[in-house]
Length: 442
Image (cartoon, rainbow, N blue to C red; front, side):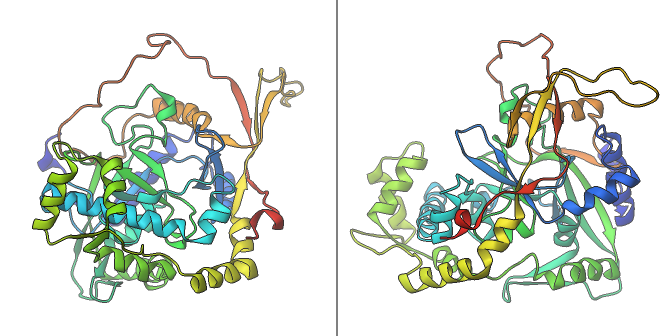
């Protein structure tokens, strides 16, 4: 279909098309009227899922089957780039943002909830995803598993001066953009055959963190390197001021998504930082090592950008008084609230079902390999089945691959060209909180 065939749709038509596409992929029958009503009770919790790296767990919004991820914008920007590469920055300007990211990581390390709760329980701290949510320029684009959240950002406008959102007041039609990503494709034209790349590749979960903004936005991070861009379906749609105000009110003027907390003031300092310690410079250079640059050459390039490096300079961190306030808030009420949102789902493999008798299903046979936590690998297996069942995107969406590049070449797997057996398994429908007071108190 030619690009000219893609006329802007009405917002209601876009929502209907996405819902219809999800139903086509609903092989677990989650979207039947009865099940949808039951499963809607999961909203607001986060499942602890093993990433495949030891005991590390990501805290994913508990939404059931993750059919699509979304990104809403007021307009299409071609190509759709992460903030660090917008405007064609030079190498020194990119490296400056890397130093700010290192400084941000050091700030997180001074936060007692990060060090004494998240790290203690091996919960993933998505540093770059967090940094993007709080205004630093990174290689990340924000995605969400919640369509309403994406439509808020597509239909409401941001005011940089007031750091707030507003709806469109004028009585004319406006145009928004919605990107729709298949998490199995991982921002590529086709899916990877390596199941361990699910949520471990270009797309990673941010989910629940020590700071509320990413969790409220059901956040995921799309990592895009230099020269890359989004590869997804896209809708251009029209909406009215009434529809804009609907999403504005849904999220309390945007305040329930654009949450102001103790991290904001610190990150504003880092966003404007132009003087750094040599220690931060060295860490950024070793971690991101810019191609074609020695340390001496990069220092000279930073001088041209009016960046100052000092032998000694205190990091931007939470001081002792701030840390104690954070601990008191956490131990008084916030820790219990967060712990109650974190759930786990047990699951087990089995050898099938007994033959039904008298119109009733038989018992499960051969239960084995019971697990207390879901794993990204296990999720990826049935997500691949879901995609095979309905590989096409939502109706009326235009496929956008701004760089016109295929999936990068991958090393062959031992079973390439062969059928892969996926064991039958049974999962808990609802996760259960499992952290005790001793677990969450710091």
